[in-house]
Amino acid sequence: MLQSPHTTGVWRRFFTPQKPVSDITVLWNRAHAHLRPSDQHLPVAADEYATCPLCDSQRALRVVAHLRYGPDYWLENAVVFYCYDCHGYALPPTEAQAHQAKAGAWARGQHGVFSQFKYRDITAVNARLWSATPTVLNLEPTTLCNFSCWYCIGRHMKQGELAYEDFAATLDNFPTLKMLALVGEGEPLMHKRFFDMVRVAKERGIRVSTISNGSAFSQSVIKKICDSGLDYISISIDSIDPATFAQSRVDGDLTKVWAGIERLAKYRDENGFKYPVIGLKGTLFTHTRDEMPLILAEAKKRGVNVVESFQPLNPKKSYLNIYPAENRALIDDYNDISMRIRSGYATGILPSVVEFAQREQLNISNSGRPNPLRKNCDEEWIYSLLSGDITPCCQIKEPIDPDWNIAKHPLHEILGNEAYENMRFNLWNGLFLSDCDGCSKTQ
Image 1: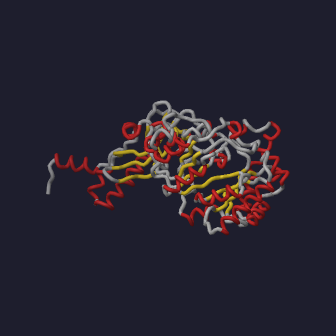
Image 2: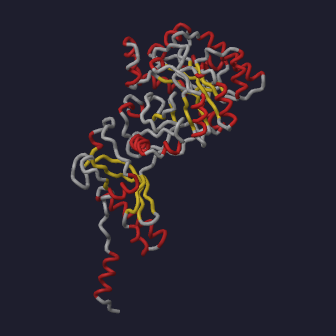
Image 3: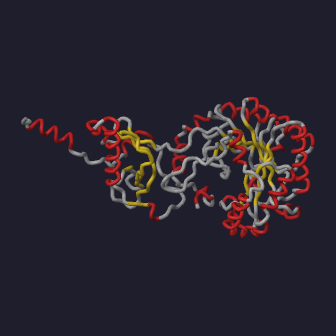
C-alpha cells in the first residue's frame, strides 16, 4: 500500500532519533536555582575540571543529580557539569546520548516500542540527594569543664550553659527526634539541670546519651544517672598510666575515674537497672599509641560495656590553632596512630558501640549517602552549639547563619532554608567548606 508524502514524512520524523539535549540549565534552575557549586570550596584535583559542553570553558566541575526522562523514568546519580564561567548545567553529548538510550530501553520494556519516544527528553532534575530526615540531635549542654585538657577546643570557646528554656524549645522544634546526645565541649554533668533535660526527653520517648570525663561519679550522682533513665554514657580515658593521663587530661585523676566507673556499674547492676550502658572513648598520642589494648582490657575489668571510639589528635586547622606550640608536632603521627586504633578495635576486647546501637535500634551510624564521584560528607545528625545554632558537624564551632537556630526555628524551616540546602548540596558533592580543612573526609 502506497503512503502519501505527508504520511511518510510524519513517519520518518516520528522514528528518527532526536539529538539528545545536553543543556539542562533551565530545568535545573526551575527545580532549585539556589543549589550551585560554591566557588570557595577547598581545592579539588586538577583533573576534576573538564571542558564545558556549552561554552568550551575549562572550568566545568562535575556534580551529581537524578534526571527524569519523560513522565516517570528517573535516571539516578547522573553526572552533570556546572560551568563557573557561563553558569550553565549540561551533560556531555556522549553521556546525554547514552542516558537517552537507557531511558528509551526502559520505556520499551515497560510500555512498548511506541512509548519510548516520550522518553527522549529530560523533563525534571533533582539534586537534593543528601540525607534530609534526621532523627538524632547532638545538643551541647555546656562548655564548662573541671578538666583543662590542652587539646580541647572547648577551653577556648565562650564558657556558659544551654538555657533550659532553649532546651525545651529545641525539643518542640524537633518533633521527629528519636535520640538526643547531650554532648559538647564541656562536662555535661556540670549543667545544673542536666538530669531535668534527660527526664523531659525520656518522657517524650527520646533515647538519651552523653559523654563524661568520669570525675563526678559520686554515689548521689550515680543514683541520679540510673534513676533518670539515661540510656548511654561514655567516659573518656587517654592512658592506662595515671601520670600520663594527667598530662593530657589536665586536672584529671585516673584513679578517681576508674573508681567512679566501678561504682556506676555496680549500682546499676545491683539495683536492677538496664541502663546506662557504659562506653569508652579516648585520644591517643605519639607516646601512648600502643596503649589502646591496655586501656580496653582495664576498662572491661572496671565495668565498661562497649568501646565507642578512639581518635588521634584532631588535624583540623581550627584545632591546630589552639594546640600548644610544643605539642603541634604530635600531629605528624596522625596516620600511624589511626592505623593502630583500627588494630585496637580488631582485638575484640570490648564489643563496639555499633553492636549496642543495632540491638537497641538506634540510628547512630551517621554515615549518610555516598557520592559516586568523590569523597563527601553527608551528616545525618543535627549538631547544635550552646547557642542553638546548627553547624554542619560537631567540629565547626562558630554559628554560620542566624536562621539555622533550632531553639528559635522549627527544624523543617531550617532544613528547607535555601542557604542550608546549598551548604548540604556542596558537602554531599564533596565540595568542602574552608572550615573542613583537615577533616578526614577531605583527605
